[in-house]
Length: 287
Image (tube, rainbow, N blue to C red; front, side, top):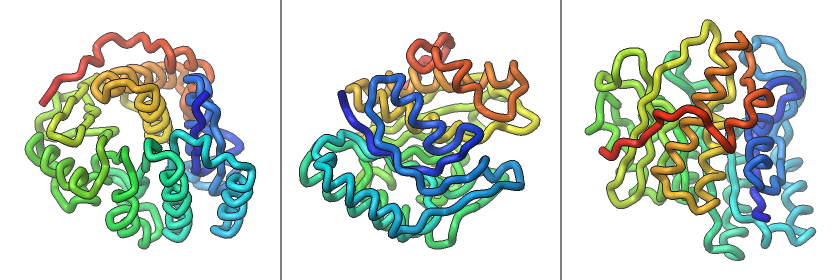
């Protein structure tokens, strides 16, 4: 059984961070070592929450003891998401480097959580430079949204040509696979949204699905997407096929969330969609 180390936020109620990632990965057959960077009552989108942001020393101590247990040699993948501070990111990269020395085939998926269209940046100001100048060099997979890809490359993403150029800029820094988790440009059909995968070497695939509109969109969809996609890649799935399967699963879960008029992702009710998505029109088109 493959092991994944997932270092993300945690909420008591709701499905973001590790709460959105661990369960789906377990359903896919992975043994997940979960390290929580924060413990909040609920995600911050509600406007009020309680809890604690764990210090870098706390996270490092956990990782040190995981290392002492001899577990680093058993880790096949690392998944990182929201970071409260760049110092924590440095700790993650240190342990990614340690694991790579033991397992050269390690897959590190970095979800460069920084912001979103309409909201702008919502992270510490030292986070964007950390992702841009350090994390990309260590990651094999990166999973930005459209806002984050633009921020990482300083390219305004108006269409396919811009997307391809931005992806090439990211590949030049190291990552083999880019999953663009959400894409809407002037070329996107009205009422639709896209998801795109770029593989180092010049191959890109895009999936276009109807956009499910929410009065208040549920948080955590990006965390769920990164986890499911990483799970498929670790299973040896071709990136284009991983895109298709991931996009179909996410569409099904968002559709169910909309039907239930839920504020949180319908992850438990829709768990069957992780392994057996029902949506049939997530066929990738090669660019």
